[in-house]
Image 1 (cartoon, helix red, strand yellow):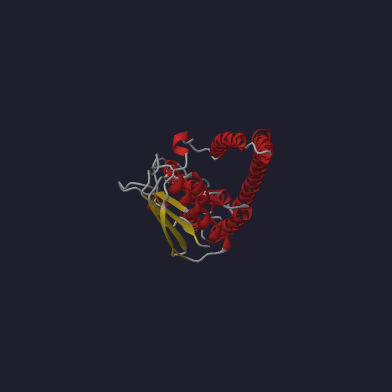
Image 2 (cartoon, one colour):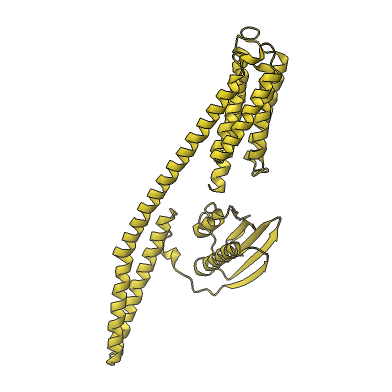
Length: 360
């Protein structure tokens, strides 16, 4: 799962936690089993209010991207802890504590895998069983089987989630296979045939040159060069359509004749796959500044800090037509390794990119 999709999922889970907290508070207030209609005791009110505050705080922190990788794991512990607290103060015929335990299991199943969901299910069931046996007043054996039912439900949630994940993976594989076949047909029917025709025309040009008909050979080579330029534009347009990015007008897509002067500074360490991606990103940035940005000078600075590789690319060229839309080739490489890309501006002319990639 991509980092952006993971962050969106965590944010939606945090929102669902807030909704759960509000609904649990309202349902316990309305429930006539304890104290009559529209009544809630002080202890239950404090516990459920604290859960609401916790839910809102988690939503704000995740929305602002604070400790985005740690908060989901921490929230699982807090979810089970609050479920335990709610069990102690509200357990009875209609206690809402089950909602909190089930929510913790569903969240882990959505975020991770079947094994993690089973682990949380076992922990929740054990905690629930111990609390029912030790702290629930009255007949302690009356609700003990609820922990067994929770374990069964948690297993079913994890199992069905795993099967759904396998089904989606299979569906993605079938879609990818169909797309590969479509791409192969397009390459075979269009571009491979063009290359075959180019090969034949080059062979005829060589035959003309061998017989001394240089002017005619030069005319054919010039015509062939124009055809190749058109096919080059067609291939670029096809690639951009595969990447689902906006097509660049032909006049803006032509390489410029400007000889860009580059200043490059690099001081970082990383494994071979990361190094390859960094160099590919820099190479694409060089091509953009030189061929399409029409920049007179450009600067590339690569450094390392806090387990991140930082890449800053700046030039004085024409910049991007849409400052909110980064170059798709660079953006895809950054996203593949869980990095972050920012298109700078600050009313400066030219193109300015700031990239962060995890070093490990």
